[in-house]
Length: 150
Image 1 (tube, one colour):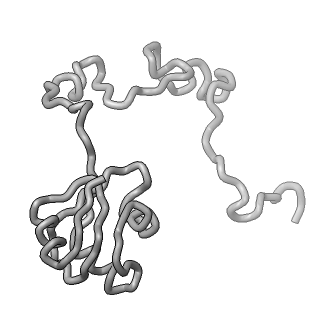
Image 2 (tube, helix red, strand yellow):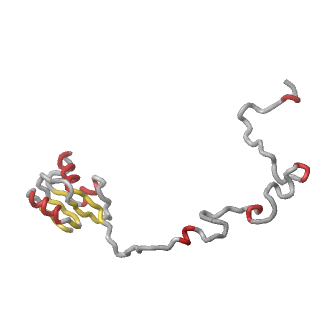
Image 3 (cartoon, rainbow, N blue to C red):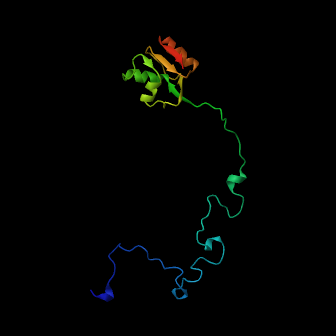
């Protein structure tokens, strides 16, 4: 080994690209392989997302439709079979209210809870929630329980 055959260790060097814009003698001086004029030749250029070369972009050509009701109430639904599962697992015995929903991650403390009628409820429960569907209320009362609206 001598100075004429030194080389870096395998995998230690990464950039084997030709250095741009370092004088005419380098072969990549002048325009630095960017061509002539235009936005792409300038520093700091970045194409905007959805840019179509000046043509009207798709997201502006397609018409908007629908609307969002600002007064809409979003309910967090809890089904009867979920309540029955809580009873089967021994989490609840007689009353179900917001603290139970929050503790079991069925809803957060700021959400509005609505009890829905999927599944069946065998246990006698006093269920406290913001809303009930007619089928859920009937099923709770048929099982001997009570549906209390907050």
